[in-house]
Length: 150
Image 1 (cartoon, rainbow, N blue to C red):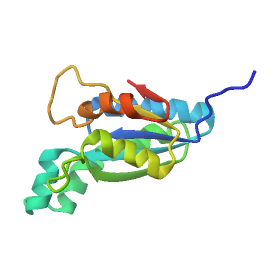
Image 2: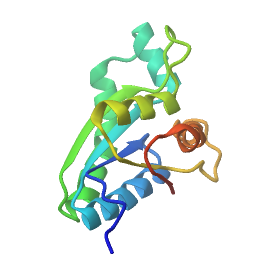
Image 3: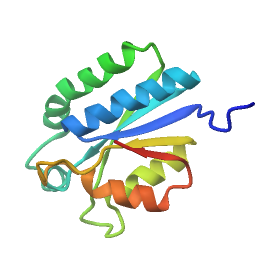
Image 4: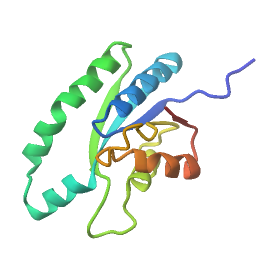
C-alpha cells in the first residue's frame, strides 16, 4: 500500500504565540515522518504593521521583538533534524484591503509550492495580538493543500 500523503514542504505560519509554537512542533513531526522541509512564515500583526508604516517602529525593532521566538522555532525544528527556512510578512495592509492573515498564508503556500500547511487554532485566551487565530478558519476553508489545525 502506498502512502497518498507525501509532503515535501510543510508551511507553518507563526505569530509569536504559544499556539503557533505548538504548530511548529506538529509541522516538525510531519516533516520528520515524510523527510520534508519546513518553512516558518512569521506573520506580523496589524498593530505592528501600522506602527512600521507610520515610522513608529523600524525593522530593527521588529527583528529584536521576534528574535527570541524565532530562536525557539529553530530549536524545535533542529531537534528533529529537518531543513528549515523562514520568512516574515505583514498579515495586514493599510494599502490593500484584501491583505489579511489567511490570504497571506495561502499566497505564501502557493508561491513556495507548499504541499501541507499546519496552522494554530484560536487561542483559549482570545488574545487579539495572536494574529493567526484570525487566519485558521480562512485557511481551512480555502487551502488547496491538506491543512492541519492544532
